[in-house]
Amino acid sequence: MAAAAARTKKPKNAYLFEGSSWTFETMARTYEAIEEVALEDLGLDVYPNQVEVISSEQMLDAYSSIGMPLMYQHWSFGKRFVREEQLYQKGYQGLAYEIVINSNPCISYNMEDSTMAVQALVMAHAAFGHNHFFKNNYLFKQWTDAEGILDYLEFAKRYITKCEENHGSAAVEEILDAAHALMDQGVFRYRRRPKPNLKEQARREQERRDYEQKTFNDLWRTVPQKPGQDAANAEELALEERKKKLKLPEENLLYFLEKNSPVLEPWEREVLRIVRHIAQYFYPQRQTKVMNEGCATFVHHYIVNRLYEMGRIPEGAMLEILHTHSNVVFQPGFDDRRFSGINPYALGYAMMEDIKRICLEPSDEDRDWFPEIAGCGDWRGTLKDAWANYRDESFIKQYLSPHLMRKMRLFVLVDDAKDTHYTVSDIHDERGFRDVRAALARSYDLAYCEPDIQVADVDLRGDRKLRLQHTLRDGVPLEQKGRDEVLKHIRRLWGYDVSLSGVDREAGRIHYQVSTVNGSDEKSDKKS
Image (cartoon, rainbow, N blue to C red):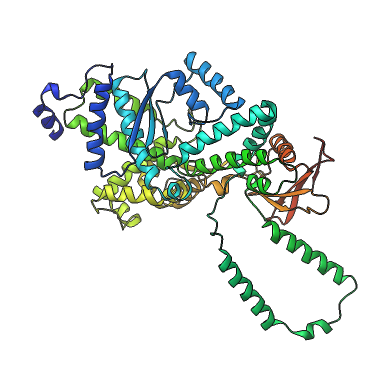
């Protein structure tokens, strides 16, 4: 009723736009109105915006280049472009309405084929929702450089083009193929300690010597040794010293190969470094898919509704916006043919709206589960705190409510290899709330979902065989075909044979061992 009254106060010419066509003037006027709500009402903190309008082909090109218009060339991007283009032309799949780059200024791309209503939706979604999230979430602050990413991408594109001119496209493509295969294993998951300076290193060295002098006891020299113990101890000490020098175990395979490969040329190491930096740039996005899209969807929904209440958006355009919004947050049921997992837009948006409800209209159940925010009234501050300080896993653990679990009808499905059937272990009831929430949160933990593969050992003065170790989780091995293909790429980058052991620590045994053999593609595969 209040919204209707507010609309009647506005004359018709107060609309930001009418009809579906757009001009740069209507886009500029709409952007200013969106900005006013985003900054003054929601209190968002954003980078300066640069909104660009591109054709559908340019959008396809950028989308195929992992969303980066300044990306270097690689055959896989072209392959993806052709696939997406055919799906789009045949009507099997729509295009993304927007692409946004985490940079300062924040660049967002709108598609010229979109109507003015969709342009308004996209500007609110990308230029303010994603922009605020990029600027304020702790993972992006810690791992990405919004100031320098565009310059770095331009350098990468120019450098790889120069490599193709100097060394040939085939040689560069071979290195890129191998590096791309290891992108998921080419990130640092934990911030490294800063390197100590020379003065600090000298101080630590002196402390070690002082400690050794204090703890040295000459009587240990007189203890009799068992036959062969000297050799065993010497071998163990040599192994420890070797691992210490190479800082093993190492989880970042691309980093290890870039620094220690005996065969790579300097330009090849630089290519690995470029791919590694890009993989690291995208790592926060992979950890915040639900939160990032949920934040942007909540922001666009709030802003366009606020503009509608103010009488700035006509009813016809609002219906089109709501139709597009409904498509974005559509979540098929588990037994629907279209189901392919939980839609991050749907889950993220639903959680943001649920947090707002808990802050404004909590139930007794909400007060028990969320005593710190239930009924506080400050939903803007609560949401901004969540956007800044959580990633998907911790966000779901902290904020997924029983109310939303019931609404989305969540349950836990267990697939145990010992059984011939699936088991529903928990549902959205009093007994299952915590287990459902914990299982959903864990499914977004990349450290748990991605294979744990580390460089275990290599003897650079001996056979130079690179020894990798895969620690199995829940007894799940690597898929054989993909595993063998990736080993080929690692061998290309290392230059010598590579072995991989699958260790099941829970069962206390080696599950499998596989190795490249004498420099060929042949594999020896042993299972215990």
